[in-house]
Length: 379
Image (cartoon, rainbow, N blue to C red):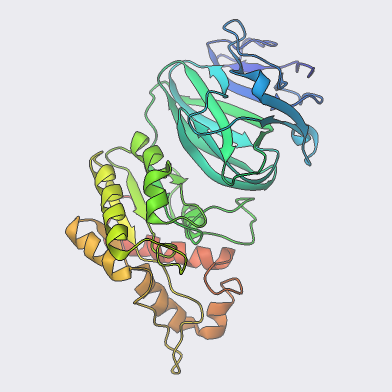
């Protein structure tokens, strides 16, 4: 059994310390999962810890949990594994909380590709590596957090090493948010601040004021319009997005892959469905066309790639659905032409499609500068 730590909660008044029991007035909650020694200031939670009303935390189905070793040190040298998973699974870790807005910081164990779900929808997509860490805002309106680590890739293990939960506000409304949808050229890579690869959605924060937006990147590698619409990412965005929020959407690369069965008409229909669901919540949709390949230079060293990835269909949709448009394809081509073929190649992996960290920064910069030039509020 995991040894319980000596400090469990820090209350709003910083006046009481509890051991092994969650207090309703607490504003900071820290959990260390697994069966090793417990880090100072954390509650130790073994896989056998069943939720009880008395404690106010625990696993809903501990029979479907397992203690495992993790490759990290100290706090992250152990974890628990979810043996049954799924966004809608009841095999969750539960924590009683006063209603309000919380920041949830999640650190996993060793993982090939795992997503985090809470309140029956995705919250973080496809975390990878040893002890990847990320965070998200979550409104609690029913008095309890229900969280699970779930497949980002079938056949892998889905582990949880630690949680830190901080109450931001008593009002369960998320801060103004930029949601991002897309594929591997857009998605997050881990560790977030030092990854070799990068997606432009991961780098948006560098060009935005921290106190203006939170950014929720729901893009995933290999994603096409059909999957983004039907496999939970659109559902997660629509659940929380609100007036004043933005949704940046770039798809088309995988829709036009040689193995894809998605026709131009289906792509347009899928994208229109996503757009209209978000617009119905009063949020602003921003469509973005994918950049071309690093090798798309002609004999005059002009970068040109305007016919790929259903670009013209995205342009048509922006007009028909009255959305903001960033033609990243055209604008990135102008940038690549200005720096030349060699410098352009240095911004990408060998395949010429997937940007490294610096390439992702430049694409994010182009997106934000274009939105600023269009006079979009907040940019």
